[in-house]
Every structure is written in structure tokens, then in C-alpha cells.
Length: 350
Image 1 (cartoon, rainbow, N blue to C red):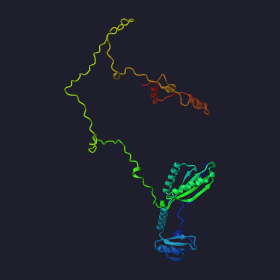
Image 2: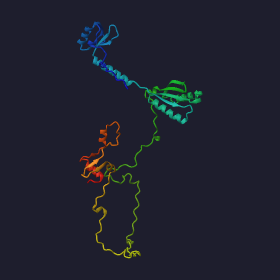
Image 3: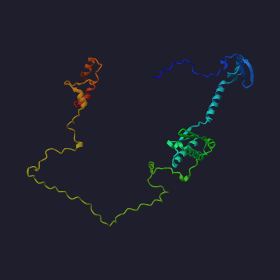
Image 4: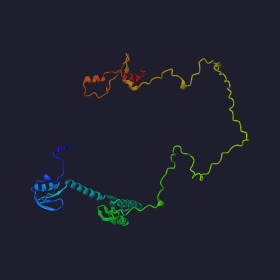
């Protein structure tokens, strides 16, 4: 559990520079607004000297004996100091150290890949820590790691310089590389990719046609497209064959059954043919399905009211009084607002 902080009664931090009435020493060494030294004066006299020129008396060297004070515009002085700090921060370069690891038995392709990573780091003006990891008895052959690091430094001599020579630290051998002066001055740029090796810009094959545009090709593409062959037509003199007519369907009489000789006898139709299913009126109301959960919990009384078991009857009933247990187990009459909905679930409502 974290310890709560005590209430801090100290006032918030403010500017600790002493100006004007904050200067409590009896005498100060005064410098005027033009930078000339006036001499050692009493503090009230120095303050009067600054007020006559509508400026502030600022203590610039409190450790001196007597303290050195200067006459200037303090607000303007603070603004100039803030701008100096901002400009210094803007021109300050933040160097990041990146690390990449090699193995003594690294393959040629893997070496090229990691070398390109080191090249990318150096072009971004970051320092690179190159580490050779030895495993097992590989540590007895440090010359293999030194050869790899020397080869890397030689191939990247244009982009980086070796700040720290290879050093053996246990099972690791490290070397530090920093970007060269050409990279820091942004004179060394990435070599341009030849135009022949660049991939063409991908364009979709299908483009949505604007509303109302014609389907015909443009005039520039029309000569290149070959016209489709004309459709084949029959001569006017050729006689066309009449369409095939389906043969007349005749219904053969069905032979009477041996078991019921009068079964296939024609019976006069006494009622009209029923309409299709989608036009047939609903004469009988479909049966309503009963909700199984509602059937277990609710019951409709003879007077039409709905009586239900109280909720939480299967609740853990320890640490409850007998009166509370009886109240939880007793049935409960459902109010008139919820009764129609429960009756519909039981299949007895409208």
C-alpha cells in the first residue's frame, strides 16, 4: 500500500533572482545600463539610481563580496535568456546509440543484411555499437571476430569512423562506430536508384467510369482496335422452319382397381377449389409456443391473475433470518403491468 504524501505547506517555486527591494545586503557593487562600473554604493542609493532610469536593479553575482548588481530591464533580460536556451536546444544534436550483433560464423548474405542496417543507422546520424557474440569454444578464436569488425569498418569508411577499437568483454567483442563528418554535415546522401531498376507505379486495371460517360473508346485508341466481324445473316429467300409445337397431350383413362371396383368413379365436386396458400385467409389461429422458463416460474390463477415464485429462491440462504427465508420462498402476485407479457409467454394471452 503506498504511503500517503504529507501536505506540503511550502509555497510554489518562483524565480530566485533578487531584484529591487529583495536585495537585503547593505551595499552593492553597481554596474549601469551601459555596462560601465559605477562603484560600491549603498543599496538604497543603487535602487534610486535604477528607478531614475525606469529600470530594475538586478543582483547578478550574489557570491561576490560585495554582491554585484546591474541596472537593466529584467523582463527583457529574462526573455533574452529564454531565447538563448531555446536556440541552444535547437542546434543541439541528439545522438542515439544503436546496437547490432554478429556471429563469428555469420554467412555472407546475413553479413550483407546487417551491414546495410549499420549503414542505415549511420546515415540517420546515430552511433552504432557492433557486437560479436561468441559461444562455447568460439571464444578461443577472437581473431575471427576482429576480422569481421575490421572488414565492416573498412567497407563503411565513408559513412562512419571507429570511435572505439574492438574490445573483448567476456564472451562479447564490441566496437563503437560514429557517423563521419560528411554524414553530420549532410553532404553524404544515399546513392540514387537507377531509373531502369525502379518498379513502375502500380495502377488499377479497372477504374470507375464517371456517370454519363460513354462506353466507346477514345479516338486515339480507335485505330488500334480491330472492328468485330459482322453477324452472319440468312438470305431472304431461305424458308424458315415453323416452330415446333408440343404434341397434344391426351389423358388415358385409368384402369379400375381390382380391390375397389368403384374407387375411380367420377364424384361430382361439391365445394369450390381452395385458393393458393398466399391468398388463403387464416381461419385458425396458430398455436402459441409456451416459454419453458415462464411455465416453471409462473401460474395463472382462476381469477386471471398471474402468480409467480419469488426470485432468488435458490439463493444461498445462510446467514439469513427465518423470517427472511420465508419471505424469499413465498409466492408473489405479478403486477398488472407485467401480467399481459407473461400470459403471452404462457400461451394464454392475446
